[in-house]
Length: 117
Image (cartoon, rainbow, N blue to C red; front, side, top):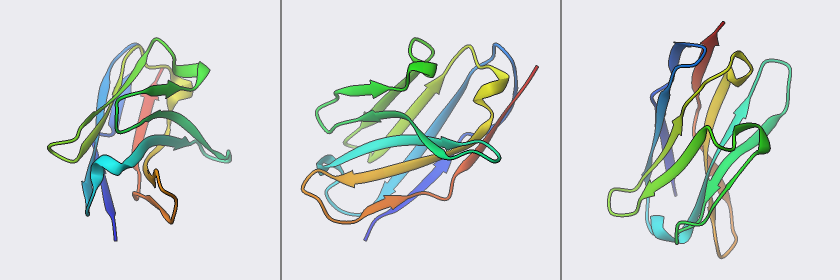
């Protein structure tokens, strides 16, 4: 069983920065592909960024060059550094874990990011 706990959301002005954290509680963190998704009101949940155990990363086009995902395999943590935030980045951000060998995936409860214009 895996539990994911996000933190770091809040209210920020456009152009500002926030860093989200996700704490992974469970076994074999290094075997999971970790990701951040977001869901704006009335919209579907979309992938923002993901990172493999080896550190390979991928980003949605809308955040490339502004957001950076990273992980600390020793501390079972995943981060999302968000810079140059825009009002359209406003959403609930969710941490996601997917075992590289298959099986169930896991979601955190989400943290709200609000970017004011």
